Length: 110
Image (cartoon, rainbow, N blue to C red; front, side, top):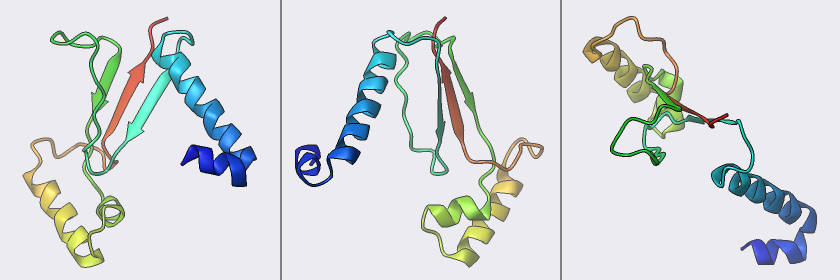
C-alpha cells in the first residue's frame, strides 16, 4: 500500500517512511531515552517484554476504569456504554481508581 501511496501522495508517503524509520531507531536502541505511551480503552494492546520472564524495569502498566466515552469508542451503544461503565465501578476491587483508559508507559534505557 505504501508503494501505491508514493505514486499518488508522495508527501504523505515520505512522512510515513520517516515515522517508521524513527520507530526502528527506537526499537534498535539508537535513540535514547524515549517514552512510548499506549492508551487502549479495549485493553487489547501487547508490548513484548524483552526481559521475560523477569519483570521489565522500564515498563510501567497502569489500569483505570473505563468511562462511557471509552465504551462508545469501542462501539458500544450509548445506553450500554453507560451501563457497562457503572457495572465496572461496582465490580472493580479498587473503587478509588481514576476514570481513564488503560495506559502502558514504556521508558527507554538511558
